[in-house]
Length: 335
Length: 221
Image (cartoon, rainbow over all chains, first blue to last red; front, side):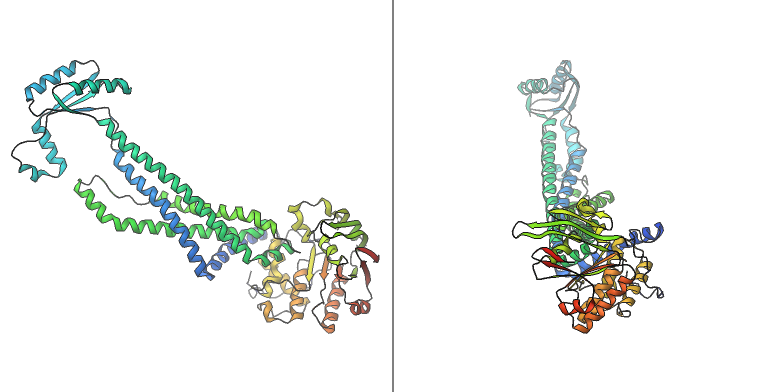
């Protein structure tokens, strides 16, 4: 719009036929270019407007970025927690820890008895030695265990009930039956703790979702309120534009772009906040994970998640701005 | 010449003040120039607001360029306003836009390409004698110059009608005469001009049609 000197002056006085007001200026191509230019102009002028008030822009973007960081941070916590449970299948396996004094021969006999039970599909006996070898391999306490004089581990019988036995009461009956046996010191249903962990993760996921929704509203309201102030500051300009025939669409365009920039910039900064926090946490998490043979890796934002984050923060801010504009622009009218 | 604006038995009532306009009827033809005068509160600005659709008549019909204003939907109001050039006593320029951008606004709104915008803005500024001041800001101009920027903005889109509210209110007689001479030039190319003013000496000097309002009633015109 400001390219005044690019085009040599053509001194043409207004044509005498002022009868028609042209709603169409120039041909289709010119109008398309003008439309594109208008959007580009609104995009960049709204950005430079934000930069022209660095203090208030920093405050607004800061608040929004923290809200976004909280929401997406919780999301990543859940994603990382899910990683812990994803490898675990909710099997209905029952582990029977036999009493200390039970010999291996007796354990084998007992296991045979269990095999005859029609509700049982598979039985596996883990001897004390097998258990020790396995424990040494996976626990990371190998050397410490070597110090022990006596193997403290009990014989374990793993019982896999028939697939048909998925209904809880039947399974519980079987479980109680085992618990009563004199050979068994302690019986454990694997499903129970998997279920427990899964329900913890599910609760965390739901909490994260609710917090994200709440923070989404925050973005929506803060962006809307910022635009409301901006409309107030530019009241005169809006009225003048209405006076010379601007549609509401034309007037709200730069404000919508301002909303977009607020959301987008906040998304970018929110992303950085979360990523920096994860980078700080990474070494200690990896360290912890190393102690457990590296079963767990800290997960950062993926490309898709980053894109989604920016789309959502921009979208929410645009929507908040749009809603405020619908109300406020109608109220501003030339006198 | 065809009718440009026609008031047919217009009433305007405000809940607080009662009837501001009572049974006002008049017609301006294309290329006609007229003063609208009367005491303050006589209803001058209400008539201007009705033409620009800032207000709606309580009763009666206004026909602008063949269009009944009472039937215009709110979302079509901007397109009606593009047929009108408004000129104000306080100029109503955007202080943070240059002269060029101020004058270009109606064209940008109408969606003209920047080549065309540039050409027309310069033509309009040439017409009001401000060519070369495109890059200045309104604060850097004198009152007379600011008024001429306002006029350039009003005519840049070549509207068939110009509405001026006390356009010479802040100007000395010499400048007022200059502005009036400009209006007459626009009249010569077929623009209809309605000037609300209580500058009696100017009105008497100009020898144009006068619509006189008294307490909401048209008493001469």
